[in-house]
Image (cartoon, rainbow, N blue to C red; front, side, top):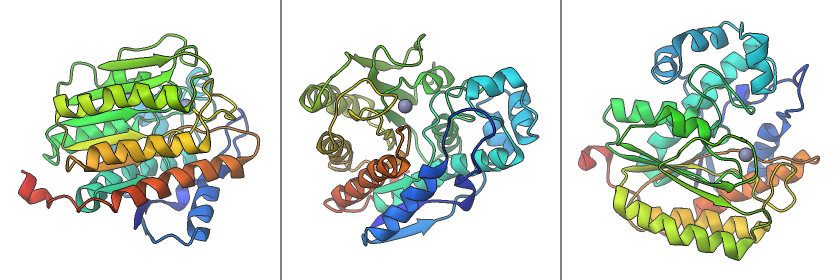
Length: 310
Ligand SMILES: [Zn+2]
């Protein structure tokens, strides 16, 4: 059973400026529904303003919610922040938080958006407005839902925003494995960064991941893994520089679920990056990721109830 968080606001009209495409968010849901796989859709609550402002500069949060973000910040984000986008990002941030709660219950749940790992304290960047990973992690810790969280970021781009927004927080460990020569040019410092050379293939990628992830889970002992499952390490991705195949991405996603769930740790995934001329192809990669993770999750018993873990 795939538990997926989705909201009609995840779709947005094509932006007036910039090249970002929102089509894939609708296409992913269509492909998931057409797949015939067992699936339950859950609606996210909008992330309240104060939880966004607990991580981001309150003035920046208010400018997004009022759709009055200065033009130079919109340029860094890559599209204009309209009233629709303002609503959308509250829902995508609520979606990752909701997926975490579903993961505590079912072992795995996916947000069908989010993974906005480039958002910084007082500005968005690289198609990211608010950092749902940092916002959700902070709220889950503050409300006592988790004591320690591991953020695993396997998008092809470094999780620079997540690293800088959670720097110095011992309860949050950030791990980013990415293409060294890709955006952002100036990298932040995650708790563990694993930069990969251009053209890294399935075996090189999986061998690096298997050297580090089990060890990190053992040493950090998280109550939850937030997984940024970007599909842009794919060889055909327009913005990636790595050379993973469909099969390589599937091995990666199943490995993350297996390493977490075999130790009783729930995983909530956020969609992350994926780019190409044909949005249907990109959406299929995201849909495949969610389906294979949900399938892998069925091999493990559901986690103990939240009450029992405390
Ligand atoms: Zn990316």
